[in-house]
Length: 257
Image (cartoon, rainbow, N blue to C red):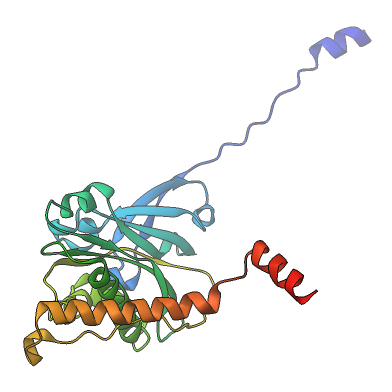
């Protein structure tokens, strides 16, 4: 009888049905809180911390921005909606390659700068000259861009900086400055992202460029001026940072003995 009772006992597996739903993801106020996507999750809180990639053309409606990918991170969830914060953007490698053509020079750089509201940004510009430029001029363009970019950014909030970049005001202002002494065909910021690091301002190497259009300085004098000043600044920086090699230390030690 006991065996029959056991046989009749049936264990039922209890399965919990999890019902998922579509949760909208909203862009920051900078992009007018547009819906940039949806995620199929059981609980909206599961979205927190996830990354979302969106084409810039979707955010701005500008077809010229279709080569730009924007990264967001979902930082908050309220009332069944995910709210994203801006992390950075980058141009596609193919679009950058098309800018550099024969007879031109492509100048790259990478540096940090901090906004007025203490947001640290990694900036990677691209400068394409109208014709071949000497290395000294390329270095001067790079350093002048860096100096001017830092001057502008530190006076504005992050949202102001982003608006100026999206409207091409910031790039246009710097391009006009550089174009005064050497033809610049393209100037843009190919990568911009927020860096979660501490930032301390350091004096970057800058070269004061003579304004040939306003002061009547010739091309040869511009190149000579830039070459002299760039070499001087580079030599100073090398003297400050260069360490003695092991052979030099041994020779000094023998001499002292």
